[in-house]
Image 1: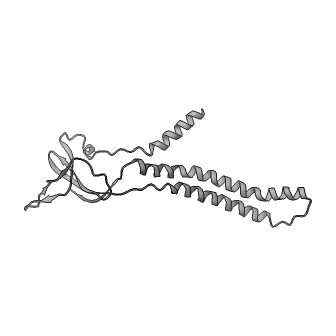
Image 2 (image 1 turned 45 degrees about the vertical axis):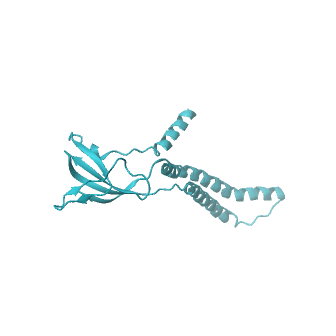
Image 3 (image 1 turned 90 degrees about the horizontal axis):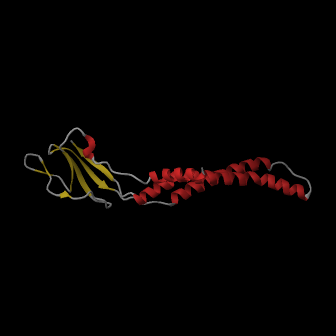
Length: 179
């Protein structure tokens, strides 16, 4: 039973890291003659028709590279997208920041509870003072630990997002669109 939970958790986390680009040629499945081309730059002839001289063999993947994705139907350009590749850096400090925030919230909640309890004046023996001290500090400890556990759980999606930045190559941002 435990293995099943761990396996489900592992598959859920790893699924966020596995992405696949869908080619634009799948937009019209009923049209038989369609294709996609990566062009460095679109030039125009004297009549304003687009010319595609510098075609690229692969989609650019380095940060800062630009290209135009041209979608052809029946060997005629139908639409084009100007794309710039962005640089993505994984910030593995973000999951730790989430844990830190939740632990702080739990600690503050425990401190607020303790603040209300500690306003009572205590008089008693040494054993009673130890029990009173444990009773007063228990909300702080329980709040901090509970906040830490909530932080661990809340940091899982953030960790998956940051790991995806390491695994998946940089995405492109569409800067222009033409039909």
